[in-house]
Length: 101
Image 1 (tube, rainbow, N blue to C red):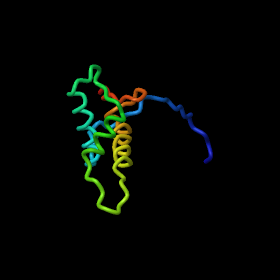
Image 2 (tube, rainbow, N blue to C red; image 1 turned 135 degrees about the vertical axis):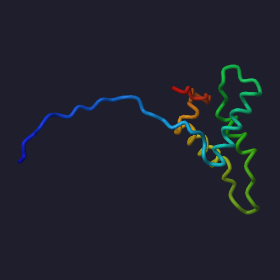
Image 3 (cartoon, one colour; image 1 turned 30 degrees about the vertical axis):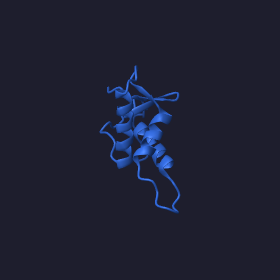
Image 4 (cartoon, helix red, strand yellow; image 1 turned 90 degrees about the horizontal axis):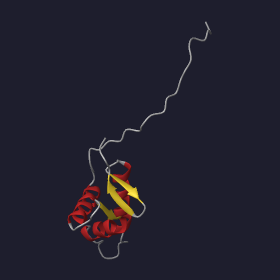
């Protein structure tokens, strides 16, 4: 019939983030390294991003001879993924456990 009924209103709200935890092996290593750094004495429940990256690298198998070392790349990707999933948040060069709503 072509008749217009009513209107549309868009309401903006909070974005819901899944906090089920890391799924991949490297993500689990990154979260374990983060927690280990906190246990070593972080005063405000945060850890330096670079320290976490290095910890993940140290926990990954080195490449076989002749292969490119991609451990740093994999560590950064794992950390970025757990940030995107809402497990950790970024405060400058620090990573902090996300507050559950």
